[in-house]
Length: 89
Image (cartoon, rainbow, N blue to C red):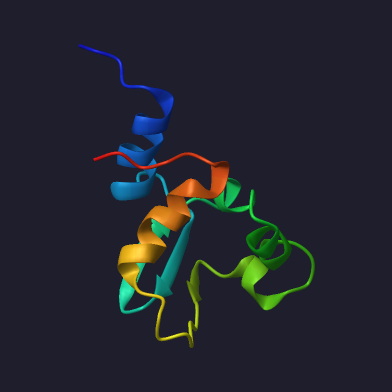
């Protein structure tokens, strides 16, 4: 069995398949089953999941995105690129 690169494994197993996810993010009519440890690389999510914010204990977060120019096509690769990686199909 050929080993996958780490970024490809993360993308396919953790992001696309959502294996062992511990948080669901709902936005733009979609659900993403993700991982807090990965999302916490972003200051936004790190703050959200720590301290006394109500989201710190929630298993599903509903994100309101009021900008009509933001869609799932742009959000999907953005979520994976938190570590500065790019997504290659």
